[in-house]
Amino acid sequence: MSDRNYKSKVNAVTDFASRRQRAATIAKQANLGAIAIVPGPNFSYLSGLDFHLMERPTVMFLTEQAKVIAIIPELERSKWLDTFPQATTFFWQDSDGYDNAFSACAKLLPAVIGVEGMRMRMFEFQALSMHLSQSSIIDADPHLAALRICKDVQEIEALRKAIAISENAVSELLEGAKAGETELTLSSRLKQAMLLHGAEGFAFEPLVLSGPKSADPHGTTGERPIAAGEPLLIDFGASWGGMNADITRTFFCEYIPDETLAIYETVKLANERGRDIAACGITCDMLDRETTAILAASSYADMIVHKTGHGLGLDVHEAPQVMIGNHLALRSGMVITIEPGLYRSGQLGIRIEDDVLITEDGAESLTSFDREVHCFG
Image (tube, rainbow, N blue to C red; front, side, top):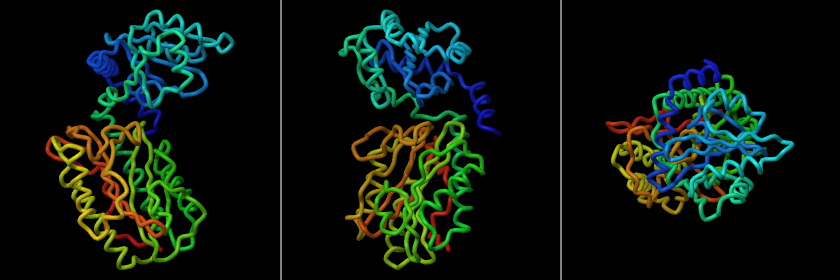
């Protein structure tokens, strides 16, 4: 099924009005008269529409009564009105600028507006501030995190598809990988394989890190050739139906040295522990502590550099954060990553990352790619 057909199918069965009502309830509980949403995951989640975050300000306001008010560029008029023919909308032309639209819209907005603090840009904030007092515009991200934290059936279906595409692609990549190939060569083949298997795009630019470069959890893929006995850390994911896979596996070129094997087995045990205990009622704090405890109790405690994981969905990183200090309890429908890792600067890094769905009776690992030691070449 093509992405276009998938989105048509999802939009036909998704109750966007109910989603907006939930968002309105969140706004009311947070004492916000309205929330301002710019193009991105929340915009698509609440409207079913995809707009680019470009030089033209596009803002959807949702009041605590679930009423939609919007500022929309004229060239998007038809697209917007096909979905929101009754919404109070202020269209603006490039030749006229958008100030008058913001001025007219502000007269209808309530006293306190919540914005997406990590997504709204300065020029949109300034356009609002010209017509509303800055004290009436607050960061609503802590409240909006609850909006998408539990996934519905269609989202989980799309995530399963994104993961299957990703796993099929990396399996195909490993069949031909060999010593002497560069990280960029393998990255290019991996992306091509994901597209051929049906990806609509990539969750992010794949990280293909070899040898000592694998010690940088968010390193940069480059021209370095892979040598025998070295780790090859691949962090990657396909996008499908708007949802993003996020998977990491660490492979080894031709063979794995004994000490590296011991480090790998420690990470694998921590990953297993996290997947075993993930369940409704377990807090993110507890999951992180229990998973990291396996690493901390080993001979490699000094190689711990990051938390256990994060939420996954329309964004690659979203709520909840699986980390010490986050006492939010896991609930059915949440999707998180469990990705313990160990890193020795200048030498090697090993990470095993799975995408895990919290269910009523425990958890299901949506990723199934083998976690045993895999040597290629």
